[in-house]
Length: 208
Image 1: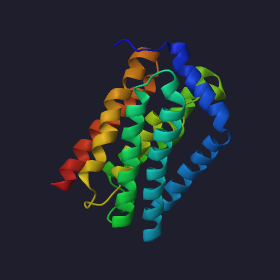
Image 2 (image 1 turned 45 degrees about the horizontal axis):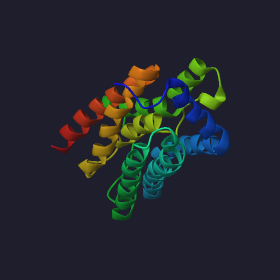
Image 3 (image 1 turned 90 degrees about the horizontal axis):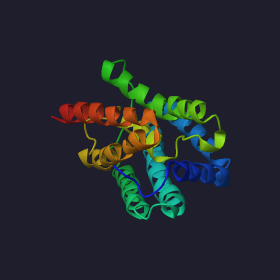
Image 4 (image 1 turned 180 degrees about the vertical axis):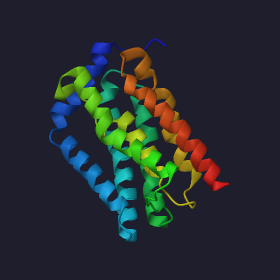
């Protein structure tokens, strides 16, 4: 599908984003690592912080990346931003409902979810950096696609009380965002679609 912007413009948005928000992207990565440690905490406050962090990530992407940066080359970004903001609000609703609890158990599905988290947090940006050979073009946590994979990983580590509507917007974005793999050679985005399929099948089966 033809896009209304060039490959050069696409990566220039990341350059501008990384340059103007520095060092906030590094702080977001540190918070992501902290969320992993909290996953192993048996205290309910750990789940609350993780849920709040996921809500923050989606709000951040909607407001800062889509509306403030990506909209400069694609006005559809305002619609994308609205979706991400709505997903962020969904996480904060779940935070106040106190029904979303995260934990890790040594099961195959949990290991897969854990791998998705690590992929979004570490492996995805590492591949991005090695491909671009530039920090300014590196796509990391706090940007749409690695955050979506990261989110699917955490959702696979929730309890059965997880509201299924939390899957809708990340799944929509997994389909939309995979276009970057096709059009711009961001091949790690294929993994986003895989994580969406695996997470949906596992979570919906668990809910039944």
